[in-house]
Amino acid sequence: MTQSTIGILLHKFEEKHITDNFKIKDFIVKTDFNKEFPQELSFQLQNTKCDFINDIPLGIQVKVYFEIKGKMYNNGNEKKWFNTLVCFKIEKVPV
Image (cartoon, rainbow, N blue to C red; front, side, top):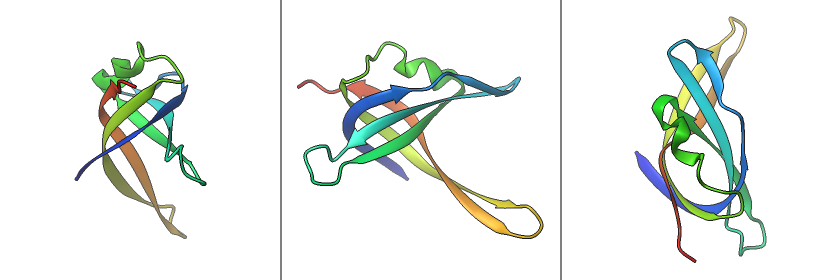
């Protein structure tokens, strides 16, 4: 399911090479910044999309298009579920 949100780009992390064929780059966007309790959301770019954010400066308002991905981890004793907001498109929002 595709989602989108608008917010301020707060932080960009370094690109991480997980395997020879898989890399990620995380970034943080602050949403609901005009409300009493703004949210700071962590998004992830993957593989060829890691470069999408390179030319966008911090502090700029952006629109992030993303999918919610979920995965179960089982260490033998306990099951845990994790969610990732995977960005497939990001664009500057004119102010």
